[in-house]
Amino acid sequence: MPADILILSAGLALFLFGMVKLSQSMQTVFTERIRTYIRYAVERPVYGLLTGMITTMLFQSSSATTVLTIGMVSAGLISFYSSLGIILGADIGTTLTVQLVVWKMTALSPVVVILGGLIWAIGRNSWTLIGEALFYFGLMFFGLSLATTATAPLQDTPFFVHLFQETKNPLLGVLVGAVFTGIIQSSAIPISMLVILAQQGAMGIENALPIVMGANVGTTATALLAGSVASISGKRSAASHFLFKFLCVLICLAVFPFFVDILKRMSTSAAQQIALGHLLFNVLLAVSFIFILKPFSRLIEKLIPGTEETLPLWPLYLNETCLNNPPEALRCVKKELEREAFLANRMMTESLALFEHYERARQENILYMELVVDHLRRDVVRYLWKLSRNSLTAQPSRTLFNYTAMVDDIERIADHAVNIIELARTRNKRNVQFTEMGKVEFDHIRQLVAANVDDALALISQWDEERIRNITCREAQIDVEVKESRDRHLVRFYNQIDAAESGPIFIELLIQLERISDHCQNIAESVDELKEE
Image (tube, rainbow, N blue to C red):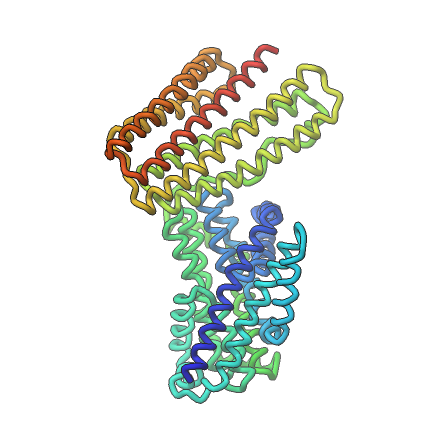
């Protein structure tokens, strides 16, 4: 029996490991496509429902989809209302894993693992990513295959039989499923285990269905954890996810005998009945709420009051119809540059604030903003390339060239903000402290750089000779002060005043600030060239 428990634990661990790694691989492969899906998702709740289903089928984890969605809501990339449809779709998409267990995907898992491993090892470019995804996909179900082998003797264990077979009270079954799923943060494992037991004749639908419903409630634990450190909108999305599941459990318990009877009519196989119960629960959940999301969202907004700010992932001003009118098209680009600049400035300000008070939620929000900045940079460059295919005179051509340079400089400021986040995270993790003199030097240089960023980004909206002069003067001052501060730090380090661990972080932080100022100078020069025209 101890050997069976060990095999069972190893199988479940492999399943969890494979699911996490598969989710990470799929997020890498489908990041751009998911962005497109989300763009459609905000238009109508039904589109959001489809987006959540597709994303969860790719990730093989509803938790990954809901946490990603809550993070994007918290960062202001999509609205709280738009997130609700995605969350409902994610709940349906997660039922695919259980259905694959019913179809005995576990028997083919060694073949999938070997095939995926070979493609991963010898493949090139996109084939490497495909092979990696196949390998982890097969590993998930190989873990369940081990669990199947280990559970055969367990059906004769009194405690196991009592826990799963003799749970006559549906409320107790819901509680067992919710607690177990909340601990391991995956509903796929307990529900898949129920299917495996049913295939061995050790589980009936009457006992399994309450545990399935409880597992659906328990899977919201991951989202609630993510929402606890999210913004007001992120908290609303996390709370909505829990309420969706909880209210649907109450509905299903109210019609429990009728629900069981429907499942028995749909299939004579207990394993298939469990999978169908999981599917129908989430379909009922989606159907019950998809048409009342507006009043439901208003109710949640009253229960969790606060303001919401949304920063769409896609360009707001790049109008394709303006491409035949170069001056108007360039005005569209200018507006988008202003928006990108605002985000880059906000990223820099919040990343530096992490040195005063480190918060994981703020870090995640900055990283989501970087996603927007990166996409805006690519979309602006693509729009300018389309515009360049027209027959442009000298002045619009020069403006186009300068805008291309400016969008790169803005994006680089955002990249340096991300580098500062990593420094702040390392400092917090190692509890590294700067000396009072180091803090004074850092704060003075930070203020100079922040002033340069403010002036440079203001220049995008309107040319100002005084701002350009100020940026140039500050840039020279920053170069000198960074060098002097580094020299003073080395002296303090030699005299054992500064801790050894603080040196690399302090010096790298100054380098990042200096480079941000360099890009501000580049923007000022580009704007000045435009004025000269």
